[in-house]
Amino acid sequence: MKILVAIAFFLIIFSMGSALVYLMKDKGRSNRTVKALAFRVGFSISLFILILLANHFGLIQPTGIR
Image (cartoon, rainbow, N blue to C red; front, side, top):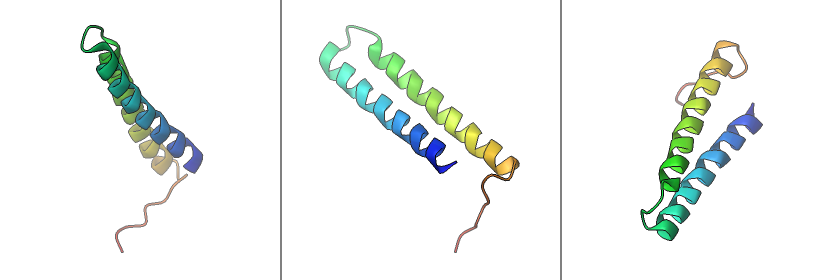
């Protein structure tokens, strides 16, 4: 489970980085920045759903605030 979460975080960070590169390179003339940011939103939602499902099926346990 930790590996899946780490991969999802990597994909989110990579998507944000590529959006920045496209923004600087294209200067707003193409929609590649929008696509990269849309992928980031999709990866973030997928990560959230993955964590909810893992909690529901008992793959992860909440520990609370200490």
